[in-house]
Length: 201
Ligand SMILES: [Zn+2]
View 1 (cartoon, rainbow, N blue to C red):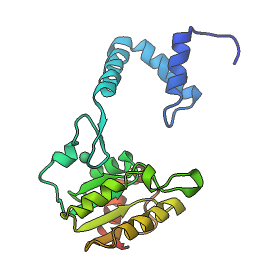
View 2: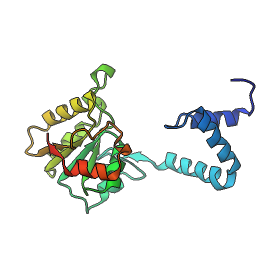
View 3: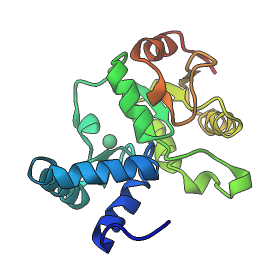
View 4: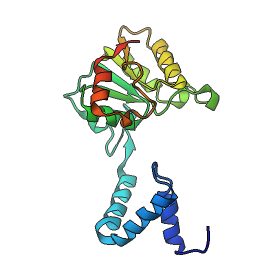
């Protein structure tokens, strides 16, 4: 970079913004300038919201969702079908499925996939709790909404093996649809169709 045009505080803001998904250095500079210009309308409330998020957001000990309460809002919702459990890789996937609003089910967030090459084994993702939840007896169907990648499918096979002893149905989303951690990119109709036309694993 050439000569400095701003003090270290602004530079730091830009560098942090540039680490957000979808923002490169150029859009980070634009975002920073926008925040500075809208100091009262945007920068101040954003700073407050970030602070609040930092203070309150926790991981649900039941399902792995991110929320400001534990158990999370979804786990507390007694209207949800306790017999159907949708297993997702990320909180973003959970939110996408909720937005599509197809099933009023329960969720389980793995927080990743098994990946032997990266040294990620069963203990490194939220699997033990999943097996405990199924073992506790209420679950009748587990829908594996994991990605079609090698790691995603290996994870699905591993989970199926672990759940084999329980008398439950294991299904997966219609093939070709799930894209690891990126259900979020699908439109709600496609996502709804993938759930409705789920197949036995
Ligand atoms: Zn939860």
